[in-house]
Image (cartoon, rainbow, N blue to C red; front, side, top):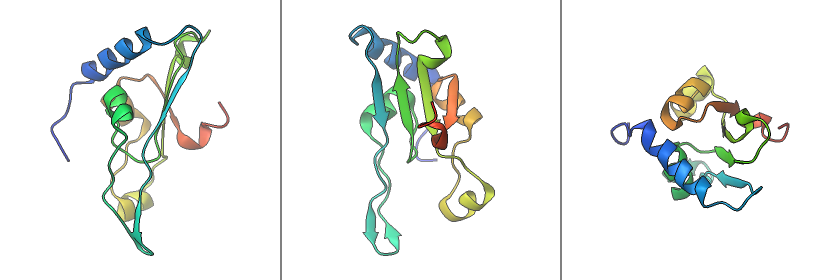
Length: 120
């Protein structure tokens, strides 16, 4: 663990504050930073996009936070997309967030796999 657990309530409060400043019928899409290659077979340490972390607490590559406060459906007002994980990914890349853990960290109720981003 890189740091002590931050209360989920902080990220919920940060999103409420951010959304209160959004223009009517606007959407915010925040993406994680890329994993930067160091050379052909190595990567630099991952550093998350500060805005995405501030609003969600997610510190994982290939993550997207969509905020659309005026969406007709309540479940579509906040959507978090995270990279799908598996036992093989855990062995090679380390532990990743599943949908339940991403909810626990961020407080975003609608968590989907990244592959579903273009389908939504």
